Structures are given as structure tokens and as C-alpha cells.
Length: 79
Image (cartoon, one colour):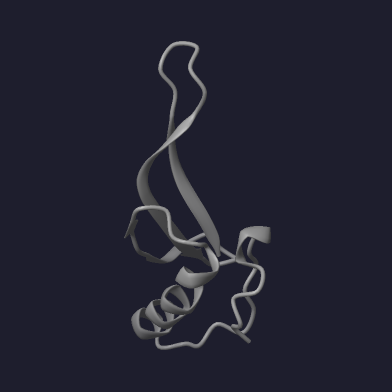
């Protein structure tokens, strides 16, 4: 599972977020997108993980056994 942040750059200004976080659930074998959500604002990554895993299970009928995430998901309490 990965988190995509929408970034943009205007001229020489630094990158900035546009207020939407969109985590995706992707199969590690095929790379097929299994689920996607969007969250307004910039919520903590760990707070979006449980909802994303639940959506993936609902859409596929299979509970994910393993989840690969970046460090932004640390301490989310999900097992």
C-alpha cells in the first residue's frame, strides 16, 4: 500500500501540497490497483490505513495478509 501526495511546483517556488491525500492499495504481485480513497486536508498517514485496508477487503473479498507502507504510517496501531 502506498500513499500518494499530490504535489505541484510553480516556477522556482518549493513544492506544496494541494490539500488532498490519496492512498492506494496495490497488489504486490501484479501492480493492479485494488482500492483508492481520497481524504481532504492532510491527515496523518496512519489514520488512513485502517480505512484503506477495510475498503480493499470489501472490494476484493480478501483480507490483506501483508501491507507495505512508508514511515509515515508508524504507530497507527493496526495489526
